[in-house]
Length: 198
Image 1 (cartoon, rainbow, N blue to C red):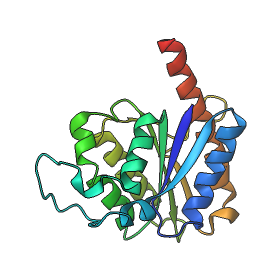
Image 2: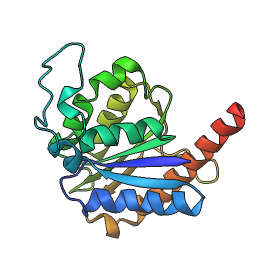
Image 3: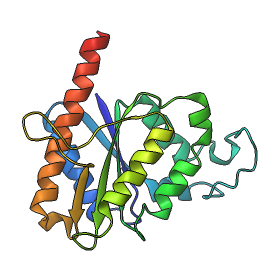
Image 4: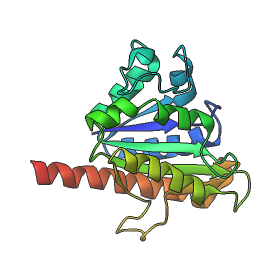
């Protein structure tokens, strides 16, 4: 059971990373493996970090042998992906947008269709655009064919749009609790799939 966390923040150890690590802790307690990928490091390893749609269909030449290609391959092998972003102008970070922009060839090959996907967001204020940002993440995942889950779980409650917190995230008790609930939902969803496919 492999879960990938995408840290879409330019800060490796900021609020988004904190929440992803909270999800990681609980996924691992439940027997899963969880790896966090730093999105900024992955895209900056490419000669051209921004997609310029130089060829259609995409020939992937711009990312061969890079950390970005490695990140995409890990997602392809994963059972679930938790995408995290701070709120920037009411939406996801530029780094995270670039990460998905350059994944066009994967969408063409349908490699991520049916994978489990979830959102984690952090804003500077209580109503700082977290739900809008979560919605953008979910939209990007849906374009790839992911099955979107939220932070709802039968033993807790129905949840909302995913894990959302106000910075500093390590002081947001509600956000920390939702990270735990999301971990339970992810592990349960993966186990149910394994049972149905077993």
